[in-house]
Image (cartoon, rainbow, N blue to C red; front, side, top):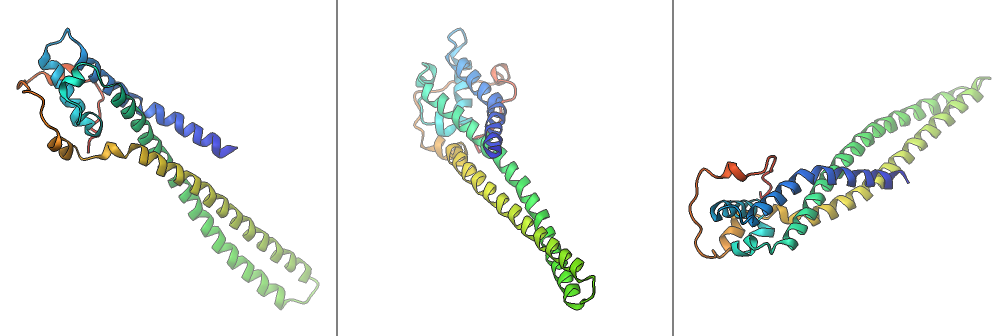
Length: 212
């Protein structure tokens, strides 16, 4: 149905939106494993991975990342980034539905006033125009019922979208994990050389800071 298509479109939009972040993350992974680079530069990439995605790379040792034992973390981060983008897209759709509902609520209130006015006129008039007034009353009631059905439909859609948003948020919640907590708990593996002035040489373009 229409809502299934809309959800499918949102999923495609989310995957596209998360694509640049996923590409940047994979670029850092590639740099960390590139043995043609100096260890210092590779460790800079490792640190950026751990700082940016602490819940996924923060508890992996530097050597493990350098050796390329990160396929699970890469897959998990990719799925989480897509889930977060999906949650954001669905939140936008929910906002759109909420706006439509407010408009319908205003129409519903006006419809109630129209019914009261039509009822008042119909009760007060016993002339030949009474049939026309009753018709107006029926039209006002039908309009009200139609608006109520539209509101019910919107509420049903919003409920389904909210369920999807909750699922997507749960799937991406680790992206919000406090990196300070992870870095504090992480035990250093060996000593890391102090390097300055090399970050810009390997930082992929467009990398967003998502660690919180």
